Length: 210
Image (cartoon, rainbow, N blue to C red; front, side):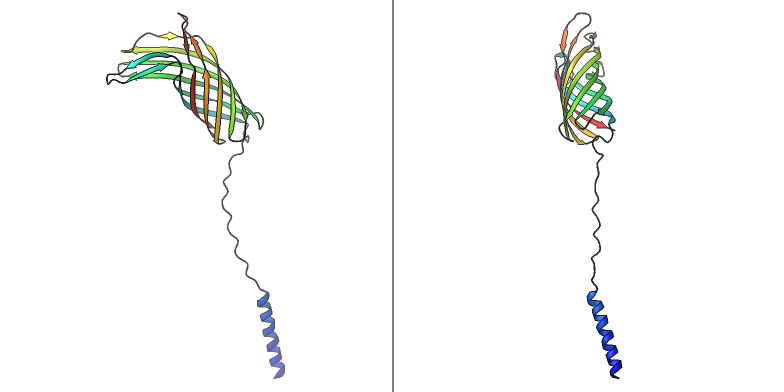
């Protein structure tokens, strides 16, 4: 009887010791999702599309509407579109080449007035960091013409090709989306009469890279 009691006591002691040595480990906490952006420079050569609004230059014409509203056509206005290539040479430097369409236009049912041109640009940039870059370069403008028709007809004029300078500051929200402020120095010379038109303008653009 004493032997059975001793064996039972030893078994209980061993069970208590095993329970004392058992620890409960907490379940691992799931890791929070990590948002990963494409590293800057992961694609050295990318396509770029952009659109912007510009203002400036000489007043070429004023279009009057029946409701009393009027619009000035200027040598530096107003809507600009661009497409081209952007190449990251190194972490600090990149270049961009684009072709665009730049127009200031006023239209109505009985007439149309527009000043349009096609700029080619070659720009170089210095990257201050992954978000900001500053740069500048040259642009060659061709296909520059003033057209009017209908009730707003004051003649058509063509201008010689010209070159100008560009300076820019661009902020990149992501490697694929940027907003830029720019200033352009342009001057156009009419082919027949030799009159000059200033096309200097400031602008804000949204660029998309892919």
